Amino acid sequence: MNFRKGVVSLGLLAGMALASIGAVAQDSAKQDMKDAGQETKNAAKDAGSATKKTAKKTGHAVKKTTKKATNKTAQKTKEGAQKVEDKTKPQ
Image: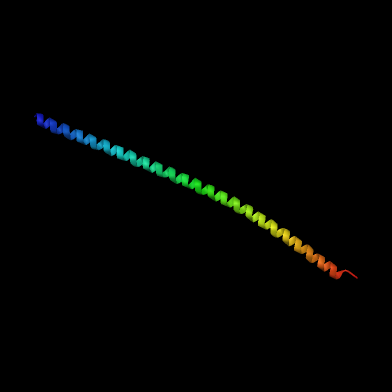
């Protein structure tokens, strides 16, 4: 009878050990999923910041180029108007 109790106790002990290992593995998987979610979130934030910075930089470049082109066009228009005025001016 003692032997049977020992086998049953050993079986129960092994079952509890396996259950606790399974719980630890499940907690580990849950934490891995949380970590993956956080990493994805941080990557998205970084990508958004880079996009914002690039858009700002591009906006400044476009503004500068547009201003340059506008000024050059105005200058050429003045030159053309001056030429027309000179040609039509009575002598």
